[in-house]
Amino acid sequence: ILLPLGMAIAALLVGVVVWMSRRRLSPLGELTRAVRHREFVVHYQPLMELKSGICVGAEALVRWRRPDGTMVRPDLFIPLAEESRLILPITDQVIDAVIAELGPTLVADRSLHIAINFSADDIKTGRMLPLLEEKLRAAGIKPQQIWLEATERGFLDIEAARATMAKARAMGHSVAIDDFGTGYSSLQYLQDLPLDALKIDKSFIDTIGRGSATSSVTPHIISMAKTLGLFSVAEGIETQEQADSLIAQGVEFGQGWLYGKPVPAAAFAAFHAQNKATKGSAPEIMRASP
Ligand code: C2E
Ligand code: MG
Ligand code: MG
Ligand code: MG
Image 1 (cartoon, rainbow, N blue to C red):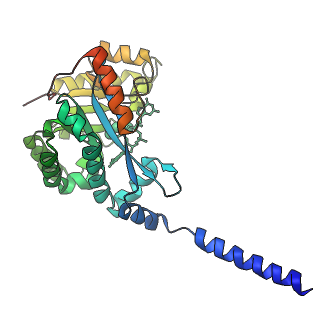
Image 2 (cartoon, rainbow, N blue to C red; image 1 turned 90 degrees about the horizontal axis):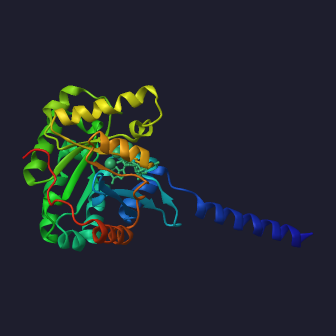
Image 3 (cartoon, rainbow, N blue to C red; image 1 turned 180 degrees about the horizontal axis):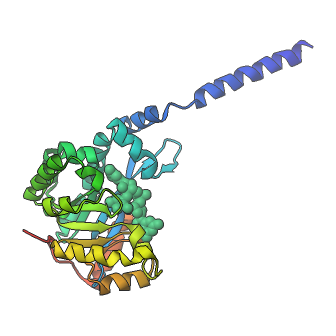
C-alpha cells in the first residue's frame, strides 16, 4: 500500500512543479519582460502608388514574438502598451528594427519610404524625434524617407500634436493621420494641423462596390483630402475593383492584401526589387506641401 501512495505523492509534486513553472506573469508583467528582452519583430507591408503600380515603400507593423514562438498581433498588446506607457520603448525598438533591417536598402534607394506608427504618447511628448534624427543620421537615411503615422487619438492634445508634427515636418518627415474617419474627426484640426496625408480607414474601402450607406462617404473623404492639399492613402485594398475605383477617384497611394501582406524585411526587400525591375522607380520625395 506504501508504493502507490509514494507514487501518488511524487506525481503530485511533479504536477505542482510543472504548474508553478507554467504559471504566467500578469499581462503587464509579460509585456514588461518582452520590452526588456526585445521580443518584438517588425513586418513590412508594401505601400503602392496606385496608378503606376510602383511600390514606394512599406508600413512598419510590429508583432510580439513570444518565447514559445507564437506571434501576437499588435491590436492585442498595443492598447496595454499605451496604457502602461511601455509603448515608448516599443516605438524605439520599432525604429531600431527599421534601421537595422532596411537601412542599407533605404540608403541604396532614396525613392523608398517607410511609414512608422506613432502612438498618442509619442506624439504628445515628441520625445522620439531627436532620437530618430540621430539614428537616421548615423545610418545615412534621409528623414524624407521616413513617414510618421498617428491616429486621431494622437491629436486630442492638439497643441502638443501641432508642435510635434511641425517639428517632424521641419526635419523632413511626412506626417499622416491613420485610420482616418474612425475617430473623433473634428474637421477643425484637419485645417489646423501641419499634415501631408490622410490614410482612409479600411472600413471605408470595404464598402466600395457594395452600394451601402457608408460607401457614399468615401468620395467625400477623398475630395476633402484634395481640398486640403493632402495626399490620400487607402488602407486594406483587397480587390481589383476597389483599386480601380480608388484610382478613378484620384487616390494616390494604397496598401492591402491585393498588393501584399505584411512580411519580414528580407521578403519585402525582394518584393520591392522585383517591383522596381518591372515598374521602375517612384519619385524621390512625396510631400503635398513644402
Ligand atoms: P494600422 O496602422 O491601421 O495598420 C493597418 C492594419 O491593417 C495592419 O494590421 C495590416 O496588417 C492590416 N491590413 C492591411 N491591409 C489589409 C487588407 O487588405 N486586409 C485586411 N484584412 N487587413 C489589412 P496589423 O499589422 O495587425 O496592425 C494593427 C494596428 O496595430 C495598426 O493599424 C496600428 O494601429 C497598430 N500598430 C501596428 N504596429 C504598430 C507600431 O509599431 N506602433 C504603434 N503605436 N501601433 C502599431
Ligand atoms: Mg498605420
Ligand atoms: Mg491605419
Ligand atoms: Mg486601420
